[in-house]
Every structure is written in C-alpha cells, then in structure tokens.
Length: 112
Image (cartoon, rainbow, N blue to C red):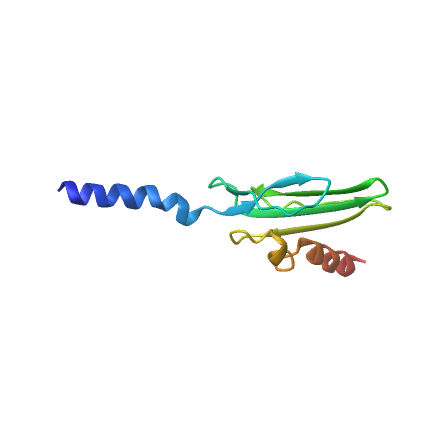
C-alpha cells in the first residue's frame, strides 16, 4: 500500500513538469546570448520573444505569457515579435516557428 502511495505521489509531483513550459527569459539592451531558462506557470501557455530597434539602440525581451499579445509599433521603430508554444522555442533556434508577426502581416493584408 505504501509503494502505491509513493508511486502516485511521484506521478503527481511530476505532472507539473510534464505540462508546464520552459522558456528563455531576458530583458537586455546588449545581446550576449540568452541562456536563462524559467519554468512557466500552468496558466502561461506561450513563450515570447520581442526585439525592438530604435535610433538609440535595441531591446530584447524573452519570457512566458498567458496569451499571445498583438504588438503595435510606429515608425521609426523596427520590431519583431514571436510567440510559440513549445519548450525553449523562443531561443535563437526557434524564432521562426510560430511568428505572430507573420500572422499580423497576413491579417493586415487581408483587411486592406
């Protein structure tokens, strides 16, 4: 009976790691590589990556989000925004996968 209890407890504790998402987290103005990984909460279903280039420099923000936000910007800022739902997909290797920027462009073209 004790063995069954320990098995069930181990499975219950392991479920969080199975269903939660790991994302890179950074907020920097000089890119030297983002290697800090966080375990997102159960409500945070997206990894995000936002880069913005202005006349004064650039900003890189990576992290977890509950929803995939739509980002609006005005010229002369240049930005990219990606949103994905696989562990560590917001790193350098995963930035092209589920780009909300491409979705936004498609929607804007369809509306115009």
